Length: 349
Image 1 (spheres, rainbow, N blue to C red):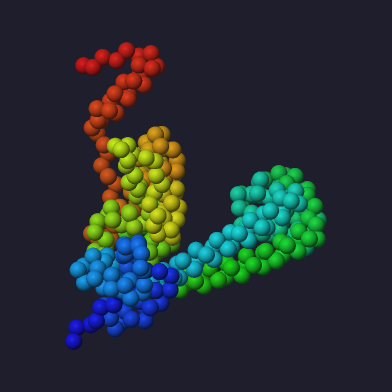
Image 2: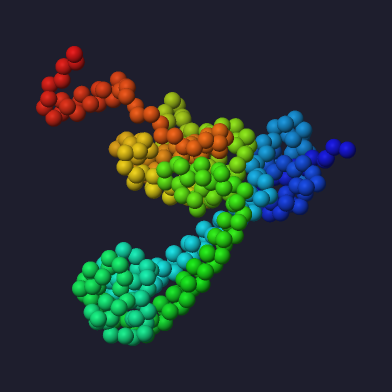
């Protein structure tokens, strides 16, 4: 007997129903925006009839639901993201207490929460007198050459209230760091079956192992679930919306999509554009000059996600696009205009 088909509209809480029935039925989880009925005389029975009619004639597009193992990996990576944000909030609280106390470690040290920075904070909490000899003992690495500047930056006074606040925030910081280490071990264990794809994604500029695993957790490894790379970009929220009225295109934001995936791509894009001489960096600089930094970063996110789609689909490493040798007519005109603005006379040979 063929498995029965069940249809559920995609709202909060329906994932629990999907998890219960996915092993017993062929379940379609649909977006309610695509299954709305006509207004008026709306009842549950009429709504069910409308859904069944749409589903019978194949007008219900199923939402993307990755396999169970990918969903479990996604839960771990998303929880790690939340823990990292909580730890960052704790860092900001400590930093705020230091600044209020006129202790400016961040003005000298690159990382307040590095080994040297934490040693200084612990010495302040222990009410030790900050001297050059003490700093020589607790400061490590290149920061030792900045001890005179540190002495000037540590001339503030840490009140009892601020010290107690820092103790609580630091305790929370170490506790969260321990939890992040544990969940990263769980993520690495869960991601072992996908180590080959992770290695391929790490060949893309700006993408490291942690980001690669998080991307796999969001989009899965089966690209047949998406019609094309453009469909994946639209689903991920890095495609521009279409708002054309009376023959004019209006300015619109990028489409809403997977916020976790978009956040990862933005971080990777900001890292990728810092690598000098790459095709991605050149594209970013070109778009940034015309559209600004934020729009250029979103454009790079779309480029990265398109590359990710083809890398997973073809199981090939990232290849740098060939250098563009031909110049378009519009680019030629812009170059001529710039030279003429500088006072040069340009003659085409």
